[in-house]
Image (cartoon, rainbow, N blue to C red; front, side):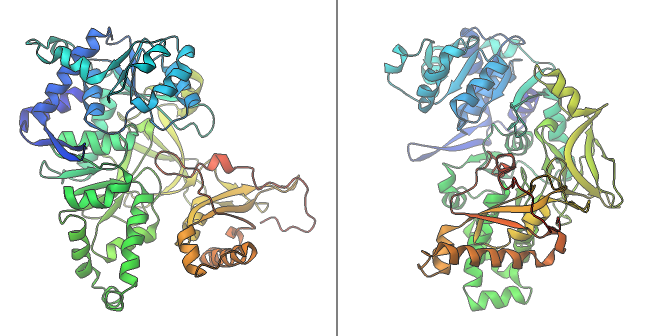
Length: 566
């Protein structure tokens, strides 16, 4: 099966069903599956006219979610051209690196990117032209020494052609590379994971089998996450297309609460940060009312949950989270209200979904069981059964683009090394303990997983961001536990009733609250150093805190006598 086959199947079975809903100029627009594939065929003809060659040229797509992203992707990948998705919010140097490393011949972008492209164009020898999806004036053409085309003008040139033969006559093979997706590069330069049509299709079919095919073409997905990210690409886009479901694209992150009421989806895929914000907003209303607090305390939360679901459009069946760990308390809190939140696990190199719980039964705190069409193992297990999670099967990437050394390092024979430490119970449910490279080892040789400490601390709503890191004191052996936190300024003002000018008082108050959250942890897991910030910590596109940026910030150059080394 190829990605084109997934779309062709959807068009054959559900031609008149809504494929995409999106907002333009203040109005909601729709495309059915038959119209979607018509747009795909037109854009395939456009790319052929621009000289893009299947199997030879790579094309970069640096777009926000929209019908143009989907049309362009399937027009290219569906004809055997490899697509390089790029985060539209990357900085010029990051875009330059990815375009050069991938050798992209064409770039699709927005008019807001014209200045960025102009800045780096001279250093892009392989880039032959740029296509802008929204309208722009012709002034930038003079300063950009590359052909600059308008998406709709190119489409208009082929719209009336009676024979759109390019798409029909060029079909990819299953093993051909569909996407090169660049990882965030937390340990160095980004690496381009080469993912084939078979990788993505195997991941899609495996994911659907894992949930007992409980999704149908009656389901509609609210799409909040960007398609350039592998989680959204497979879990939103491909799974929806495989089921003939609707893809309802939010206008932007600020309109999610209104869009969910208007669009009335049945499925919401979200990163944990969004799920947390939703829960805290709901919980603040529940806790602010004596009657609703009493109802939840009696275990009758689903009575309130029905009202909450109505406020979320009335059709919501599942909230599915991934891309980063979701706090257990959030999932339990939603469960008390009768709202099902399930957490899966994956990584870009695995297309990306690796494990998922059944929608009817999940163990909170785990990431479910492996997909049925792959193998997993725990390598180098310790006495507690914790080992590195490794994957083998049809979802695993072919390797990193033009990077043999990194590819070699990523595998243990046929097994992909995830870098995640995990444990598995007798029923096959997997729990992630932490990142292998983030593990903190103190002077006593005890292992501390930063994520465990972060989960304990993050229960306090006053804390907006938390990152736990190991730090060293001079030449002393072992690491101590440090934490950097960012405060929610609005909640802080409420807590101090507007009188939060004494920084020392605020810092002391926050540190005391933080240590109270750690009381459930063993003493050796308690932080020794706490840094309080008012500005948010830097995050990745899926809202993970960039731990690598903070590593080493708490180190002390001179050792302290008498330290206990925790």
